[in-house]
Image 1 (tube, rainbow, N blue to C red):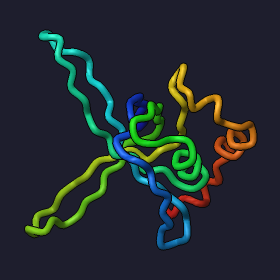
Image 2 (image 1 turned 180 degrees about the horizontal axis):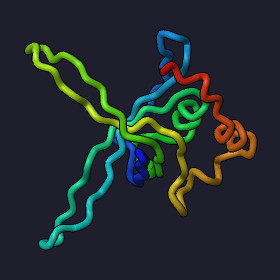
Image 3 (image 1 turned 90 degrees about the vertical axis):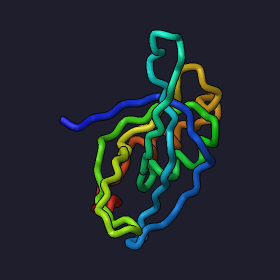
Image 4 (image 1 turned 90 degrees about the horizontal axis):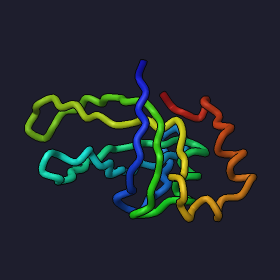
Length: 128
């Protein structure tokens, strides 16, 4: 089973983009804190995420740099050729679901129609 759930903070403002097929998407990075080490120091992992369609529009509308976010999705890899000619693999999360962290101010700004649109994602909009 390939499932990832993480809670963290968005590292920069999100821009909605349109792909070659016309589907909307957004890419964003979430800083997810690790458990404190034995010295009490805390490190973070930076997880690249991609959301599509209505989920992407929802993320762009309700989240900005520094906001807390809960992301649910699956890890996917992408292989590409680097400038030096070597093959590289990049890992990221393809987003299935987004939630506001408990107690976040974003919940009060959310409307019922936005939630309905967000939860009824048309999977045919995803171009792969």
